[in-house]
Image (cartoon, rainbow, N blue to C red):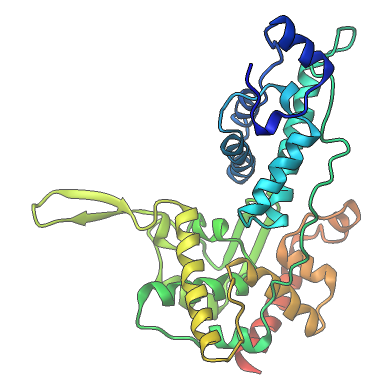
Length: 338
């Protein structure tokens, strides 16, 4: 048995097995991990875990990884490798915590009461996971007003600006919720994909103007819809403007960052170079706080998960909707008209 760089340190039991030629009967972590996430129903959750497993496979240079080979040293080497590839501590933390969760699930599945443990150690227990860097993802008032008033003859650039401001005006609505939003009447009535919390927002004239520009037949925005295209050979093809929400999100973020780069080159520095759609959510919360809207009301606008007491307090739909609509109106007025 040949040891690679990741497996320099082995247990006494493993050494005995190598000397005696015993076959390693430990279950395989990577095989288990892929099988485990196959039952996940939320796409974002599935992708988060899959990215973590894929990174581990790339580091391991094999899709075979017995549980016994995963040691604290192995994991620290994995973390160092990710850092050498300029992956942020925030992302590394997500990867490691995802793998740790899968490892714990495997222990629960394989180790049964009254039987010898199949997985006899947990290398994650004393592992030091890199701490996420604190991030401030809110634009200044000046930056928000710059985007709000930005105009471009390039369709994709203007679309990115409009989607950013639409998300901002909708209380920081996530990209996936904008992308999949079915046609609405006077209110946006959907469930937030990430938390499945109810969202109810009055569609203001400012929102409606953007929705009308990009309106679909079955959705508020046409980007997810299959559209008909006829080419010169008279064949009719059907295509989506963007293949999926990830492609749409990347297109928006690329355009936003191009705008930011231009501003930085002109020494204006009113937009962060790494701006993404998620800045709209943080910016809404920050501006709302600055103009005196309470934290509880901001949480309702963001459709955060609520504690039991808040569920009772805001259980009256009309009252909750009125609070949200009033807060959003104040934020829009402050950015556009004050």
